[in-house]
Image (cartoon, rainbow, N blue to C red; front, side, top):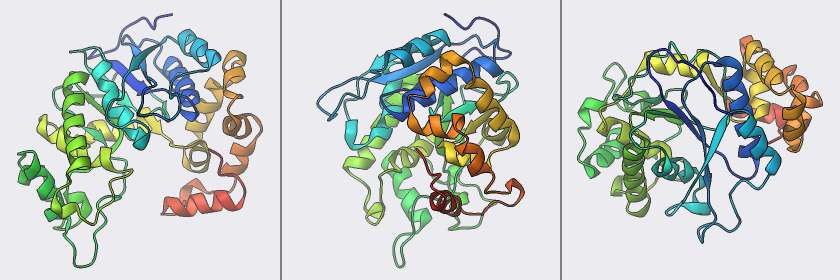
Length: 335
């Protein structure tokens, strides 16, 4: 079944990764939310499926026939791809290597699978010649060590590695050596005019950083941050940068990158929870999602609402770890 119709502005494809385990059930929710909120979406909804090879210790592909049938009914396509560089050693690499198998020259919006589409994509002012990514992030990388290199030295070394202009990437309204001065994104969404062009550069940069990190990165962990270290370099190299108008709509009005269901129930607005439970309600979708125990318990057995009752959305803890800890104390950290 195809998703037919019109999208104002640009026609583009939505790309996400679907594989065995939690991500395949999140893919169903993503597809169902797109169908609910954007019935006139004219692009292709594509789930990239990693294939088994010697970089995986178990088959990462979609083994569940019910999931496949559900995605097909929701108008999604499943396209296989080979992960030839990262594999099981860095599964986040799937979002890099999958782009090589996507339709060449067709604008794309990549979404993490743990995303709900909550509003109309039509008004979002995507400029596919000027890429950007999610600004819904914290200063997770780099971690500055006492007497170690600072932000400017670390990021400057990365820009130098790839012959990029570091100074033009800076937000000069932010103080020197404050993390927001430096271009940094969450990799929950990004877009460009061609997935293969974007993916080739993403892979080149990420592989170079992994295999031969600049000396300034000597104290820095790259797992799981490698994709978010390479991403701003890719975006800057392709003529993009901060686009607050797009990021604000995508991160708040139009999509919800919830990450895990307990966090969604704990902190997201009522409208997001209502959408989740609405798109999960049809029996043919419920039959699939109930196969995954955390979704069965959170959505269908009321534990999500129990988690929600633990928090006041008007006064949430400032740190996500405090939310996680409260959920864990109440045996509601299910993922």
